[in-house]
Length: 444
Image (cartoon, rainbow, N blue to C red; front, side, top):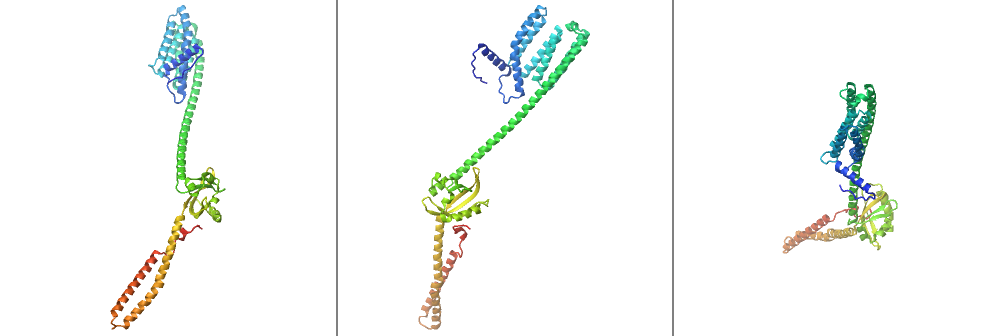
């Protein structure tokens, strides 16, 4: 992981920063933490312990090594030097895992505490080490291991009591302490040890629980945020799709406020069809799109359609910007728009369709007139001719032109059949009733 360059006015401050950075990298390898949980803070605590312990140990160990050597204790300087060297080598080496480094520090300090207590016969130094180790282990390891340090310390103090009582070897403990005093000291220390370990473990469990809850809440929040972002994306996509369908629809469309009848939105097709600009449309009311004689019908239609949840349909008359009138089929439905009750309207010019229908009606009327003429005007004299030909044929059986009359009779009957066929076909082409529901201009 790259670190930002920092400027230091004091060379000692820069050296101290570089030293901390070196120790941090040597111990943890500068891992990237996704979340700062309890493990992160335990590692930070261990790093800070080594950062401050290494220089301070030189200040404490070197004078004590010299003093112990001058008093004739050769083993203590050797032990202190070996402890500092081994801890420095192990903790600053990249070949060992962090858990091993933590355990190695605890074992070495336990060995130092045991040797100092046995060789120097000092309860104070040993007790300080044992209590500090209990705190260190409780902070760095699990609660189960922390509680085991209480048992380990109890076993060590029982062992020291055996040395004092049975005088197993020549130790200053046998000279400085009696068994009753040692028991009193050990019990007080064990009470303090138990209290410290229990309280620190309780705090760590609470902190872990808090971290877990925060992590769970963070995950839930991230999930909720991701879902919200996804919903917003879908909403934006739907909104864009709606705008595309609205703006690019080939039919004129607009949205108006149901209370004020003010136009709120209009598409390009309406602008092209009605001749108004977008700014002019948005400053208008829907009443201005109809002639004055149709405003009462508009009010009645709005009252009826406001009670419907489905699409309402009406055929009416609209007005162009230049004043031209045209027939329009209007479909509208209730929608919410920017917090207002509004209606979406789609209009379709049906002038050409109505004119075509009217033309067909005129043609049908002419066909009815022709059919009436054929069935009444043309066929009536033809029927009389048929009657006359029958009389002529009956009265002129031996007439020399009988064959001529027969031909005439056949031709007249053929003409009668043709007229009947024309009348029948006209009745099939022209229905008796038309679909007035579709063709009327205003729906009731």
